[in-house]
Length: 130
Image (cartoon, helix red, strand yellow):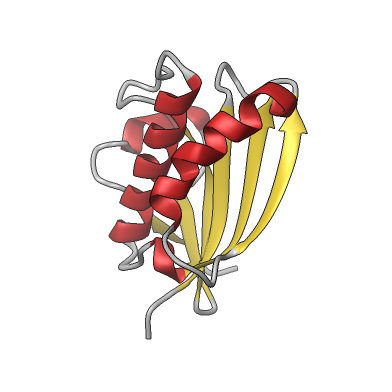
């Protein structure tokens, strides 16, 4: 098996090393990004839902940028939300700030009971430029 082509955002290597996963992998013209949460540089969560969503998108955009992509290149999105009945609308209001214009990527939303102390997570697949 060939080595994985891993993409790391600046300054967050220790977080991925500690938790034993890659932030993103390039493969066959696509970028597969691991789920991003609203974690600060030390790995701790932002204090409230909307701050977590903003930080999750900022963390996602750092990875996309490190691979030469932007959110415009995202084709498939999966979001995980704790207590979606209560949290979906406030989370989605913040997500719209980052989403851009139509046409939008595909989205699958999943309600969950636990996200390692977080309330929102987003993972994507993006088309690499060129």
